[in-house]
Amino acid sequence: MITRIGHQAIRARDIEATAKFYREVLGMKEAFRMQNPEGTKLGSIHMFVAPSQYIEIFPNGEEEFKPGKTTIGHSHMCFEVDDAAKTLEEFRARGAPIDVELKKGYSKCIQFWTHDPDGNSMEFMELPPDSKQVEANKRIAAEEAAERGAKA
Image (cartoon, rainbow, N blue to C red):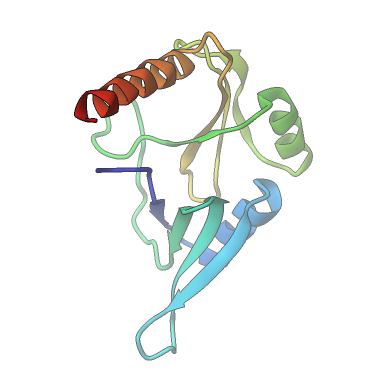
């Protein structure tokens, strides 16, 4: 059974500049670096999001990925925050480009958007009690509890 998303992998044009953005602008901690089997070349940098959740950054990106409303594949990463307005102001003070200012999303979450040096789009969302996500969390937790009770 799937328990969580382990990591989001991205490829960077300049791995050190991208890692610096995640550290200094988004405030993530660098968790570890992976080397090739010979230990002579940087393979990836893992940025800590939450326990067992990481952004994995690979080097040597060359071709531009053009995200858009009709592009098939990856669209964006989303991070949950406890206070979207405060997080937005902290990111702005650290020089983050703000693509979409603070607003209420269709799911009733409070969100804003930015992107990293390689153009990877990121949503940051706060989940108020009336958001679709919180409602779904409660409903699914109740369903799973009922399933566990039925098996006992």
